[in-house]
Picture (cartoon, rainbow, N blue to C red):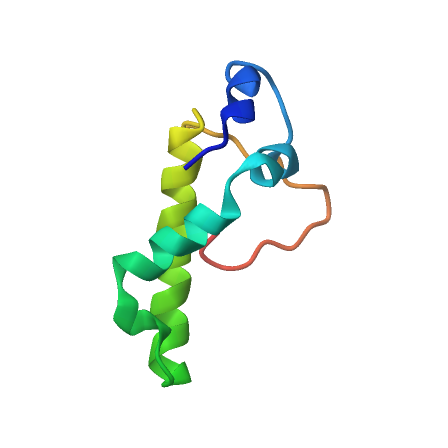
Amino acid sequence: MARDFISPIKGKRCSLSEVLYRLDWIEILREAIEMRRSSWGDRPVVEWRNASDEVCFALLRALEKAGVDVYATIIVWKKGTKKKSGV
């Protein structure tokens, strides 16, 4: 899922935007659709929630394949930033 050119950043400090930019987004979205095809129907109230979950899990898997430890990664919030509940 990760493009070959992501490997040079393993073990180095880099920004989240740099990592996200280097991911194969076509493959991430393809995997999200394949995980649960029913999430991509025409009932917005149900499907939007399910589809967002599938995109999230596909993104986490792509980050792990790129060498990012998604459970040990530390996010540094900007001062004065309001965090959404649950984050």
